[in-house]
Length: 337
Image 1 (tube, rainbow, N blue to C red):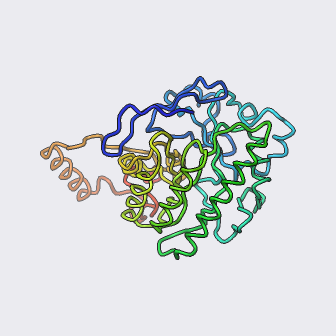
Image 2: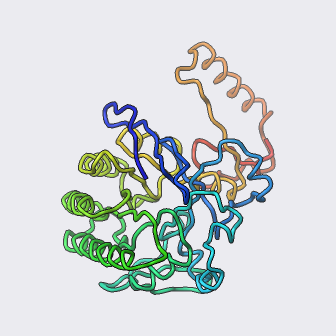
Image 3: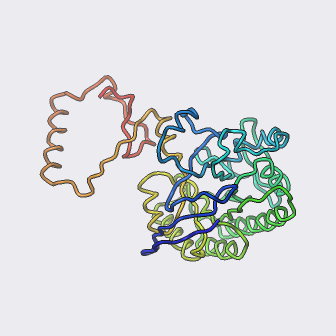
């Protein structure tokens, strides 16, 4: 994998990742996103429909938490997850967790990391983790990491432990991969440390010293910290990372948040947001007028106000409030209007 940067302006990066895929003949423009899947399938889309859609991301995101229970089947299959799910020509990236359903906290140790599949908790040592990656044969995979450092106000001691564990897992996994005769994947090193800036920077610097193919800014999902703290940490971390390797982020998929991260030097994002919107029974809607005409805006506002006064928009669900997790980019298809 090689990153060719075309332009860097105030931290924002434009470029192309080349030498991707089993034959090293594929490329990916950055900024870009990963195709979110559940157990190797794009939710709500059949393979035939997915094939007809233009602009589908060339990198497919697999989640180990949804596949770990099936690794013995894949070991016997011996041809990797790509061919098994009908995506033999795709670039496959295996992350540790499903971004839509983060795991419960309190189950990681100095020697193990836990993922949660349909049958419950699966505890992994580095050797078991590498065995799973050998069965999956992804092009990239997120290394084991102790990302169980949620929310603001995490103690510096716990943040330091998170970084130390993650670096130890990375070193052991790199050694095991070097000994493997079948695993030839790019390792994505995770940058941990919660909301403690000092530990985030230490994690970034130490991970950059290892032979990793790229970097993952982990544990920024949901409302684990305020946006102000989040943007500050991301800016500080990307400033410490080398420019010649891609930066991924987990837990960020909303369009406005993606743009904030692009401005701070992040290259690749997850694409689970449309899935969440679909599950809520909503549709995406965007206004592309960067600076709407003031006169038109006033007329539109008056039209809405008049319609509401006359009762044109009242419906049987008028007393119901929108779901609290809805974003400004959605319309609720359950409402009559």
